[in-house]
Image 1 (cartoon, one colour):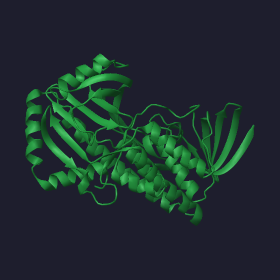
Image 2 (tube, helix red, strand yellow):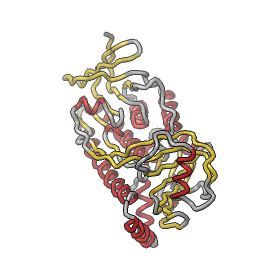
Image 3 (cartoon, one colour):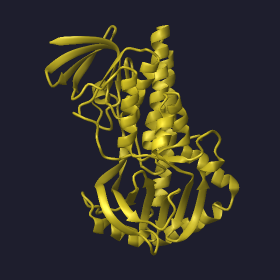
Length: 381
């Protein structure tokens, strides 16, 4: 069996894994990044990058490319059908990116892959982590590739391999949490009566609905739906829009991609176990409320690449302890926020929904409430 030696082995090449790799490459740290899939996924999944995340990505020299390719959306509104309950204006934010950037995950990943290639690195695919053991100098991992098994000896192992993380399971790190229920997700082309400079959250009597503009004349549609179809049709999406969205002017022309997904709420007990570190969805998953998932993982990645570099430079793991504590605290705060938003958004009682909408409209009249909402969604609070 062949063997490789490196300073860092990254398992998982989604946004968090790629961003971690770029951060290490920028600082001349030797690493290997592997992924079990034969090629990057081509579905959109996460679709928004917030202002605080763009600041982190600027340090990785990818923010400008993302901004060029994505759609700048300065407004977020909560509506009850045609009535505006809350208007969040991101233009009040500090810094050069006072907006939400709408860009689907497949396009974001491609930009990250291209940046990694410029730095002289590529993801090894398809390579699966079969297992690992701790050694006196770090870890020894057994990987399975197209040509068979091989060993990787590394000082650090980074788990960026998602909710079902093999790295997290191998380290014995608990991942407790709950499940909210099922949601309909679809990317569509449609006639839409609301301007493309707005992401809209509808709180209607029939339930919640999120509609967000994306590149190439697409819209992202997300709706809580207990009996959501596994592959939503044009008729399925139109029915949800008709019941929860604007009262007129919305017509679905094409469903490009769709799925049903379960929303989970989980947080790893620790982001570090010795030489094993977690980042992104391997460390935390939560409701898509507020579009925080990929953003939290990308900010993890930038912080982790810096912490690992510092640990290798100094021979001390203090920076890794700091990463584990600080980023877990940040994740816990985001999970608490998205949990509150999801529970408010998915109230079952029609009377409770009516009072919720009136309270939101009343609070939205206060400028400090609108500013707090903008900073929180953007990742600055």
